[in-house]
Image (cartoon, rainbow, N blue to C red; front, side):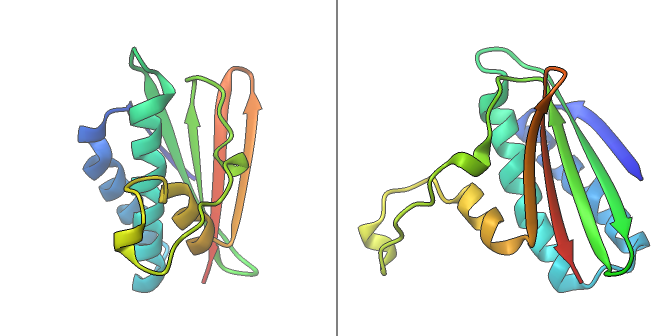
Length: 135
């Protein structure tokens, strides 16, 4: 298990993604899974950076774990921002063409579609979002 604690700021998304990818490389994670996890990291961390602490700022911790039988990677995001369960957000009605759709609002929906398991908990003043991808 490896963790990174960093200021929850949009400009740190690349550092978070690099940290996660280093862990995924050590776990011999397939490229397709890594790319899906990269999308999830971007969406989850940018939501924390943009909304968790507004109007202030705070930190986020990202934990990366590899599990066996079956093989999977688990990413856990911790922040002490406003309590918010993104899994309760209703999935958007996605029209057939992009021109018919308003911008935004697809991030968590996309994470739900790409990941195999998602759980949320609010404990001891922390939002805890756990995502798992099997490979």
